[in-house]
Length: 275
Length: 310
Image (tube, rainbow over all chains, first blue to last red):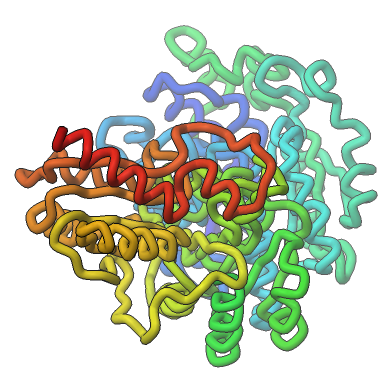
């Protein structure tokens, strides 16, 4: 299903980037780097993979998507607005007083946001519960959960990581936005996750590693879900924090810094004009 | 209470496939029948309470009524943030069930004493907080919680407590049960302290003090009418809880009284004085040590009344 018939996935991911920069600028908000690293992942999910209907956000048979890294919500709100879950002008209210859109993904009053997140390490257990309920009720929808790499420090990620393969939840999909930078340094410096794919494999997941910015690779991987029958899928997407804006790429600073003034102008120039 | 709960839940679950029991790998010999006969409504999350609570939230958001189950603090404090964010914020139909509230697991040590849970759970938005007084109330509460829409905490005692109610009382979540009439003072009890509160009331009667006893099985929302009536109609209010005196039943009742225009002449919270019980002993022994048995309650009441009249 492609709800963005008039634009390519390339353009959708570009729009998600542009919105993310505009939103964090207007809101003087952090986490622009965390939004930019998953633009292609979200574009493929909402432009192609997920079986959802923006006109019926509560449709019981919909695929569920949980952004467990709730701090990247600018990109999520952006893609939801682009595919029609709510009006694009809501994005201008990000962070503002009385708005529906706070700085971590929130389900209240925001159609399309499945659950509220923000404290890391919560999403995957909830996703596993949804997948288990679907399985037991004989439903065919799938549950996708996008994690950050830093989030994998949380012990509460590895509890459901153990649980899901034991229950053969092949309707559950984890996507790790492996941008290699977390809150106080690189993942390697803080708590090295490597070999990350081997860890998920050892827990019983069917794992594939992809370039999370290569639309073709992302599309191919997502179209093959479940990678193996009777096993949950884990897609490790190698990404670049701040992707798309050269001076933000791979810079810890852009986990926090908000694009303002000349930097904001430069960022927009790099992203080019919207189609 | 434990047995009353699981038997009732099993009966209800047979008729209602929305009900699922999610355990954190506890309940040996307790959840067995449920597990064997209703396997599609049973989940063992493993020794992983955060996972247990998140799973329950996910299942509840998919139309289930999920009961998480473990003992003492494990289903409460270990996964408090999951309860707050995933369950309460989403108003998910999860019932967090703790067996062994207070010092039921006395000799197992403080890791197994749930003595701050009521205060903590009471502060969470959307969450109903229920602590039945005896097995009869536990049965009625379990049944009522199926009808309730939204999250709830059910704090149970152990197995084998005496039944205080000789017949089935009228039970409504959020409405205290007047178990004993009395015109002089009121003992407001929550959870398994009901039995000792009743025995204390009987002893006080022999001394000429007629105590009303309220079983405050729902801490939130609190039955403010019953509290205010006690303040108007009796001269002293004592709260009795196997819990810290901070923020639980005593705190809740004090909040209501201080914001009202009726005050009892005397008010005292009977409970643990913000302490860890490092003494070794079973529940009865520890209750006696901390003044929560019949004798302790009577002593507290008398000391307040004697002091006040002196």
